[in-house]
Image 1 (cartoon, helix red, strand yellow):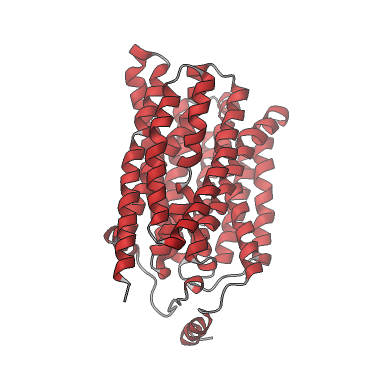
Image 2 (image 1 turned 135 degrees about the horizontal axis):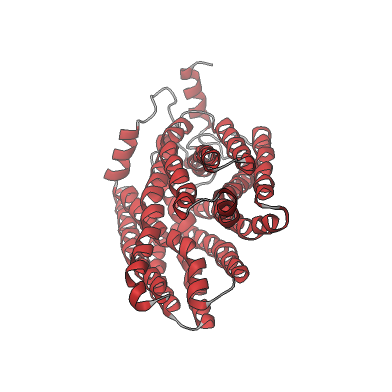
Length: 437
């Protein structure tokens, strides 16, 4: 079939609603893929201590394996893979990416030292970079805008479940069978999922859920064009800033909260794992799904109300989180951290769905990849570092409490992120008013 014929066919299909069964299958596959990618991403931190002991590694080498080695390749390679996903069938891309990062996770169990383990982690990052941007654009093509936030939130909760598996199951397998067996256990299921993706997944019509078509005969958007669109479109720019700043807070909490409970409240390591599974598994999943559902409900009334709700919850959560961090009582700390942790996670699915809604249909994967680049190079890298610097500076005078102060300081960024979400809502309302006849 020629490109012209493909374009005409696409134009005839854009008003046909996506098949409901195909939507559910895609949602289940993408959620499971995100779950497995999260497990494969965090398992290394769970296994740090036995790996360090066997290979005689330094903390700096562990930091390279868990952070820079993975993060840079994951963030940067998302750009070309996102560009590919915007113009080609996403099914083989995601399937092969799943198989790649799963095989390399399993092969990590055969590592002979730092270099071979680092190579495995780099290839895990390459595989995962092919899944995320394409997955987000698929959700946007399958689900209309007033159902998109909840659907995106469902996919994000796969990450919450992945954290539970990573913190609990991987730790158990490592304790009973050794750290190498843990890599085998979490890596092999992804190979099966990749094969299932090839068989069960149906590629949706691009823009079909919005009643739009994409002219496949046009050349794909360049990185420069997508970046310019992202930075010059008020809604996209404000959403990118809000998501990146929220990510700084969230990833700082994810990295430092286990140490906080251990240092400040003398919680044993086993109970720290349970608390983290509760916070980021159960509470995080409930908050993400609730935020997605509320956003869809509010957006049906007016386009800007959902994202403005995100802004208010970000700002409201900050004082409660700070109170929890600074409390000297463990029960009070847990009580004050649970509720704000619930509402703070509202942004995860809702803001990603908004990015896909307002991005040009032909560059949705690229927009997701640029967001991924920002969150990894700024949010993931700078947020935890900021907390560590504050903690080190104050440790001589405040002792273990310095970490609580560091976490409180990074939480203040929530007010900054809330400002950008509010401005994004204003930009959405302006577009809505402009589109009125």
